[in-house]
Amino acid sequence: MRSQGTEMSTLTGTATSKTIYVTRTGLPLSFQFEWPFRHATSGADFDVLHANITLENSEGLRALVAVNLSVTLREVLPSLEPKDTEGPVINALRKEVDNKQTEFVKSGKLVPLPFSSRHYSFKQKKWIFGQASDEEIARMIERKVYWQTRLVGGDVWLGDPIEALYVDTTTDHIAEIAAGLGERGLLTLARRYATALPGLMDQKDRFESEMVLALRQLEEKHAFERG
Image (cartoon, rainbow, N blue to C red; front, side, top):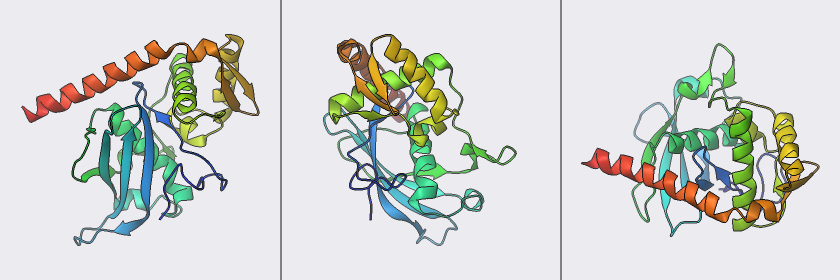
């Protein structure tokens, strides 16, 4: 079993600390997976991967999910190994949070979530998680660098292909936008590693407020559905 963000990065093969991924609404998340995918024991024709999504900067809020990989999507994956599935799975789960389909609680039961062809374009033969404007990407970078620095520390790698995949762009384009943030005095950038400057870290109230608002909207949605 190997958990994302601890011991080894499955994408780079190098030792790494916990990685923070932010949603488009501003929620800082970390992910742990119980590799590998396993065939469903119920007799259904799909594979399952258990995951723990932690809402960082909260009082132990998390979501326990069973990622159900459909047969259709399994056929387009080179393998079920982390190197071929980790990025798309993280982004599929992040998308579920953005769409308010995932609820964070202090304790709860395992909830099934589909990992299906709705996240993949067979026509274009690529993953689809939604495009983002340069302004939205800049905002994502600011949140990423802020939360990673505050919660984990150290420099923040902005060459992560998972981030580029989530906003349908390239790591080169993310680096270009990050360089613009550097010109505004928010961070320094060297070999795609960002170092947060006071101009960014002093915006604590902004990032905290964005997180509180996003969490409240998510909780209100689930409270309404429960009646």
